[in-house]
Length: 112
Image (tube, rainbow, N blue to C red; front, top):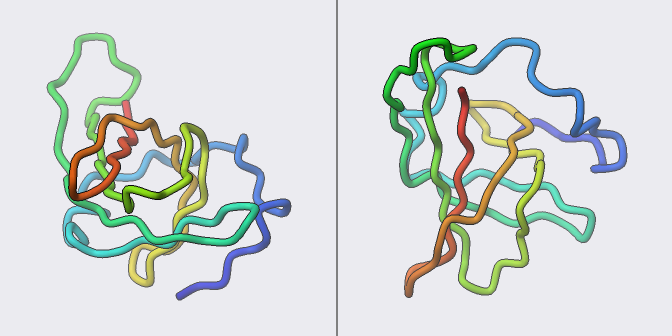
């Protein structure tokens, strides 16, 4: 996997120069992504990547969401995180907790 700089070197407010496409992520459903945190790193699994309904006047015409699953004891909170995957590369996403069950905690990133 590509080496990421320490979290202190990653500008999480910089945003994305070009909006990623859904097709960048769909081949990797079921695979693990490394999350960089100040206290270390953890892995989360991409469990869903889906297109969202088009909205008139939306700033981006191809909206989509990604859902990731983490362990139940995961200390990940809502916010911007740097994710790394050997094929996708690294990307900064804003993850929001959306629920949990016996299998883990779920987080969503929405692109619109």
